[in-house]
Length: 457
Image (cartoon, rainbow, N blue to C red; front, side, top):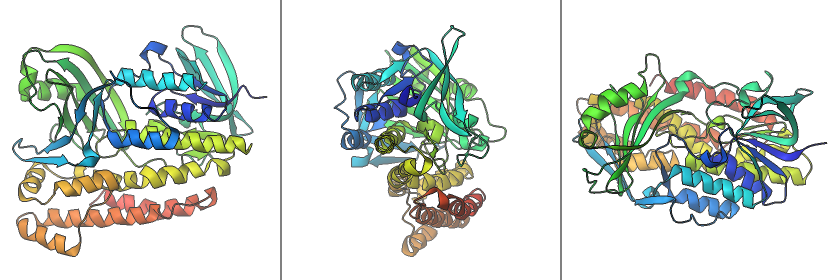
């Protein structure tokens, strides 16, 4: 006897979207979160989202229009800024358009939509253990905040949407096909503050800025995202490579002294740190009666660390697939496998390609970046292609043009061309993603050497 059709641990964007999608098809869903109900959605974040992600949710699960008050400003340009702070690469176009929003209000809205669809929400509750029967997932053990009393709940499907910690994923049996741990080198740590700036006027609040500096934010960047003319979301993110710095220290020593608005009167609204996986999605997001959504499944853009849109996409595909499996009364790994194919086709393939590009970015110097921006060796069209499609246009003719303009950095151009080829190789491997669990091991064997090589380009 089961208590619910589906139990979802974590009421973030991915978990809430999955809950809504499943409940709308008439299934009994329990959505659990350790935060108080009024705090669900409060999270360290850049608070920006591409408009195309909302359109995807409307098409996939009928997500209604975002109500007034959540969107704080519309965005139509992202400027990438070289370490010298002189070279600037504007990225514009339909795919860049999006919103700067209130993260808490977005989270509250998504949970309310789930409740309206019939989801039972259990806040201030921790999911303590993954319940197993015969080596397969059968439910969870929960504990209410401060109660000290544990309770066991059974479900046909358990979805881990607990974030970067992946606390349920890490409790899977050793023989699970899902990777239980994420390597330290595949994580990013961040620190972010939100301020009102009464004495500082952001002239172009519709433009988000990303600043590169390998000495300060290795493998990451500083972001300055205005939320109006007198409000800003500013933060730093860096990869957790050996010897990495503490992001709050970088923020206090580097950001506070290097941006003019930080030297004016600041009214702090929010402050906090966070962590996110920045690698390709887990090679499989499902096992028997079990699914991963959001950060727990590594559904995050490996280059810029954004995960709201992709976790919503993962939640929608997981919700649709779980509903279909429940309607067939079969929630085995084979029945849940279409979730893998759907996610890889819609975002996972691009993510894997971006993971290759991430390792290239880690191994370039500030001088390399300044030179590449100044000489046009890396162009806005490259980064738009990488960001939206996981592809960089570096055909023979284009390579020759860049070799001609890049005298003095020939090795950099050759490395870039090699990376572009690797990205294409990964996309080809992902286009042949296995249609059943039986093909997973040989598929992973094809993938592994490409990623091993990418770390040394």
